[in-house]
Each structure stands twice: as structure tokens, then as C-alpha cells.
Length: 64
Image (tube, rainbow, N blue to C red; front, side):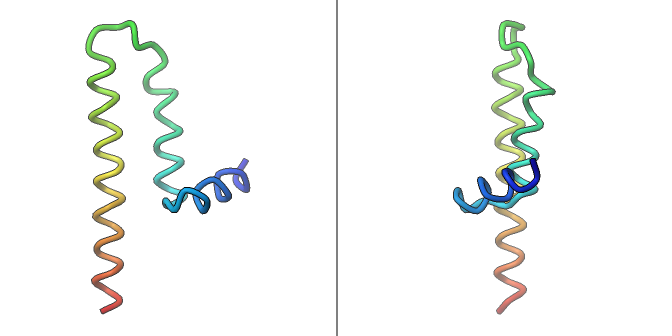
């Protein structure tokens, strides 16, 4: 499974940790019929992607 995640992350140019976090959302949000779950899901995706963007920015700044 780790090799598949690594390959998918590389193909989509995202970090492996970010992809694993996004995939883990399946366990957190198994049922979108519950009111408000889609909103919570969207917020979590945004939080994960924002954190990844911040890490990427910090890494680029550290290289300078």
C-alpha cells in the first residue's frame, strides 16, 4: 500500500503525508447524509491542503 501511495503522490505532485491525510478522511466521514458532514469534510480538506501549502512554502524559503 505504501508503494501505491508513494506512486500516486508523485504522479499528482503532492506530498505523501498530504495524500495519506486526504485518504484518511474516508474513515472520518463515512456518511454524507448526516447534516453538516459535507461542510465539515470540505473544511478538513481545506485544512490539510493549507497545511501542505504552508510546509511547501517554508521548505522553499529554507532553500534560499
